[in-house]
Image (cartoon, rainbow, N blue to C red; front, side, top):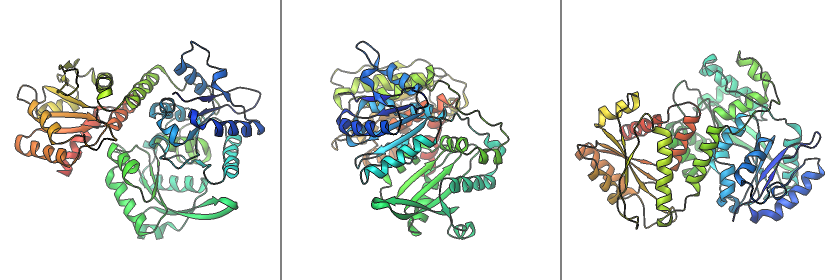
Length: 484
């Protein structure tokens, strides 16, 4: 069952709001619509907009295009919803925020917050609905749509970046203790933020804040582990990592799935661009770039971003297990072709039985002069780039990337093919799979690496940002070598 949505309306000076929610949360959304309407905020149901025969995805895109705010209702049901996934995957979130559309998550049940929006503050309706509603209304009423562009980070250095972060923290309501004291414990800032509790009580959250300025690299696992350790020792309630770059995939995975005992928020390049557009005085203080005109209307989803949005949605919505093995292989190949053909040649697809149990590979001829693919061909004799696809269910503990799977790829890497291969799967390898990976490298100098959905999505977003998606492949090779 698809989710219902609310889309935007232009009535006088009223705010334009798009709301994404699951049909299971309709009662709450009815209440929310009624209360927002009292405040002069216009929202209406998508069934008034989407007629029989209309393209649902096209209507969704049109609603988002005309909005200044996007509210996402977070619940156990919405997290599983196909259409909520469509509306709030990485591509759409990136496109909306890039054009200054405010994304306002609201939590109505205790559930996992998607990593795509985990760095945004959310209104918590699970404790005090009236108080959370006030916060939501204030956020809508006081702000306008702000179109921003990426700052020229070449204009500043690491010391200046720390000063910029300090100013942004103050603007966002953090109270910062003397910086000299924080340096003694190995972190840039210790900050306090007032958190309102039910009954209008106020408590203070202690935040460990680390600013990481990069020219060419990204926020790594090591940086996260370092700040996490300091935060635990200093008994902080939360961690804020601020970077002008983006997270490596391994860093994203640790934050999203492995750190459970402390809240971690990230201000990345997109978040900082948003904040600097909000606080133009700080932007003008640190950058020579001309001021940006507020309120300009531009398309959120250009044709390329729309294509990426659809690829991500198909990847996330693919059924797990044997039921979806063919769909998973097809979407993975479609993504890999979009990313790497050219510079690689069209893949040669191996056969597989209808049971889905036998090996099926995609072999991409590697004749490219691109530095990354030349490096891979030179170091691993990779005449072909081999991809194997495993659509294991993430809820089935009896299946996964184990010794048998890795050995299948290992045996396939012959002299005529090369010595590097990739296993694409939603699941991470288990201990036997990792052990076989090491043995294949030690005994045969064959390197078998693992690509999950997050890697594929990250590469899609890099391509959209006009960056090199194969850098992710090289990073995986570097991570293996450095951790071997």
